[in-house]
Image (cartoon, rainbow, N blue to C red; front, side):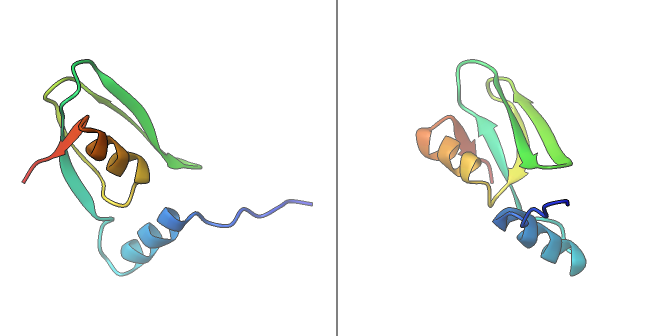
Length: 80
C-alpha cells in the first residue's frame, strides 16, 4: 500500500499560481556572503541547486523560509 504525501504549503501555492497562468513569485537577491553560497531548494522532483559567488545575483522563491532567513542574517540582500 502506497502512502500519499500531503503537498507542502509552498507546493500548493506554486501549483495554484501555475494553474492561473502565473509564475511562482520570485525576488532578485545578491549574495553578501564572503564565500560561495550553495544550497538546494524545493521538494520532491522539483529540486533546484543554487550556487552564488560573492556579489552574485539570482531570482529566488519569495515564499521560501530558508531564503527569508538568509536575508535576515545578512547573507543575501534584495535587489530592486
